[in-house]
Image 1 (cartoon, rainbow, N blue to C red):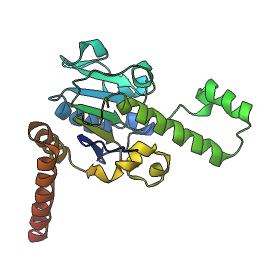
Image 2 (cartoon, rainbow, N blue to C red; image 1 turned 180 degrees about the horizontal axis):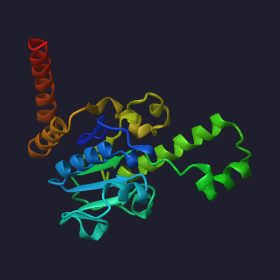
Image 3 (spheres, rainbow, N blue to C red; image 1 turned 60 degrees about the vertical axis):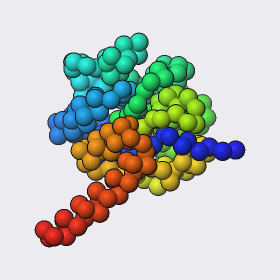
Image 4 (tube, rainbow, N blue to C red; image 1 turned 135 degrees about the horizontal axis):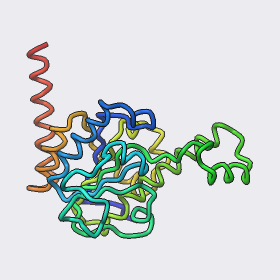
Length: 229
């Protein structure tokens, strides 16, 4: 079976790690806000790990953002991974960018009656087994989030996984086959401005033009760094 998604780009932004502790880190919060403001110029849907994570970044919704899918594309939509719009309802057709902020891990077992009962029922006493289940459920919610936006193999779409933990090789083991097939198309970014320029060129021109610019830009930047070393 051909899983090739010719016009869908998968980007990983490595600029921060948005775990539970980072929700109180003002530096990380400002970083995420800056990223989302840059992305707000596009028709964008953003998924957060939880409603509390969303509120830690935006205690009040800024202008141009909404929590309601029906207000898209007039406003960029903020949703929760694992919520009803990521699990069972297709996203609007004219989305340009889908971003998953952080990794949507479940709450710890002491705060999560559902997982506590699940572990008890299946007798998951091993820490390793529990960690594996946590990882798998987080990745499942990630894939569900952006998967609803992919309508067909020729659709033009940019998917951004915004958290440096997505660079870990162990995640490759959990990817579904169609995503593994496209793993060579993943591009990694450390800078918001570089990411923003790449997205602009991809949407304005095409993916090939954007990838060509990215390669040339990184060669130029490496040369500049060597010159000033």
